[in-house]
Length: 276
Image 1 (cartoon, one colour):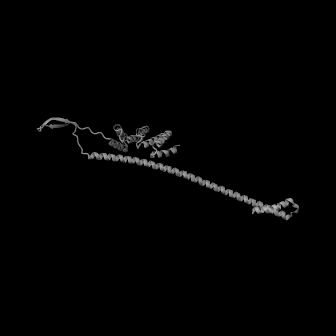
Image 2 (cartoon, helix red, strand yellow):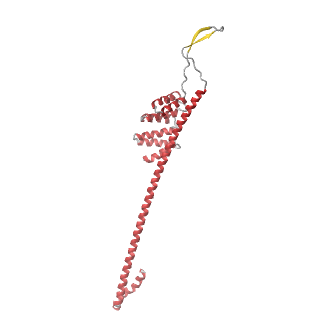
Image 3 (cartoon, helix red, strand yellow):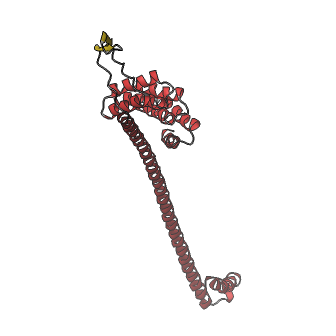
């Protein structure tokens, strides 16, 4: 409509400007009316375009706000998922620890059953006098029979007793059993776990340097043991408790590098994200 008004107005304007003497007042009024209508039409068009621009801008702002909210929600969900995964892995470690306690209890019960199933042989008390008889049945000179020495407990019994004492809260007594196991049976299958629980006993007492040294001994003396990645991860946690973040990062990176398939490796990777 605006274009048609412009086409119709152009000849009249040319006529008025080039030969005003031939234009009547009616023609001038028509031109003036068309110019006013054209101005009004242009103004309405500009207002409509301005309104459209405002609406588009508002739509873009709403879209940007929606995208920002979606992005923030996505980040929040990712953080929640990381936290839940970390909690699940920590629960798995706790279950593994409980399983280890159950295995120790079973081992203790097995040793008790074995000891009860064997026929008891009571040695004669110390200083017992035994009378030997001759061929004719007459007693000869008395002989003093010494009692037999008690057999030292094996690694299974020492480990079981140490775990029992640790469960009861007797950390110092538990360490005595574990240390005796390491001294008398250094190549036993229980040796790595005994060393680990020595570290746990010190940790319960808040003796962090001693606990760190005990955990480090697990990794250095038994690097392929099942408790080795746990001990290394525990060292990193001790460093964090003491505010030594750089050392904690190094230990967490060692967990990932040396034990990439362990549960502790995944925990270390998640924790490193929060420390960087």
